[in-house]
Length: 233
Image (cartoon, rainbow, N blue to C red; front, side, top):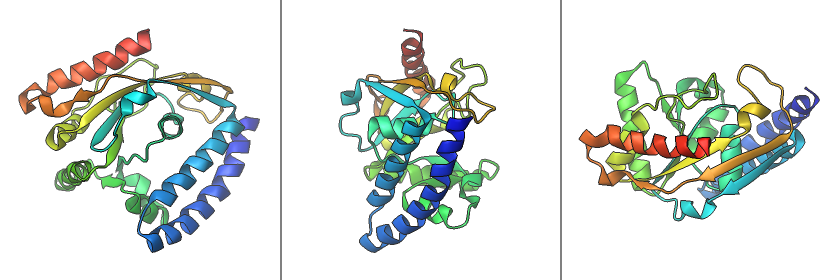
C-alpha cells in the first residue's frame, strides 16, 4: 500500500500541472508531442516508484507505426501506461465518454487525438469510428483492448469486433501485443501495487486490409490466436 500511496502522491499533482501547462504550450506550438512526452515522463517516474520493471521483446516488429492498430490483452490498470513506456509510441485511443467528464482534462485528451465514444448512442459511436478511420489513414496509431474490459480471471476473453472493423476500413497494420505480469502487480479490484517484472511481447503484425469484411471473424481469430499462444508460451 505504501508504494500505491507514493505513486498517487506523485501522480496527482504531476498530472494536474503537466496536463494544463503542457496543453497551453502544445496549443501554442500546434502539436500534442509535448503532452505525450510529459505523459511518458510521469509514467516512467510512477513505474519506478511502484518498483515495476519492464522487459520488452520484439520491439522492432512495430516498425513504422503509422496507420497501425496495437492490439493487447487487458488484465490491469497498469496495462496502458506500461505499453506507452515500453513501446515508445504516441498512440491514441477510442475511450468511453466517462473519461472525458473531467473539465480541462477532456481538452487535453481531445488535443492529443483521443476520441470519445458513447456506446449507448449508435449514431455518435458511428461518427467516432469514422473519425478513428480517418485518423489512421492520416498516419495515427491507436491502441485497443479488444476484450473491452479487464479480465476478471486473467484468462484471455473473447474479442469485440469494433477495433478490427476500423483497422479493415483504414487498411491498417495490426500489431498484436501480449502482456504478462501486470495482473500480479496490480490486480483488478484493488489499488495495491506490488513490485515486480512485466513482460511485453510484440508479435508479428497482421495486415487488416488483406481481409475482406466477410472474413473479419478470421482476422479476429488470427490476432487472438497469436496473443493466446504468446501468453501460453
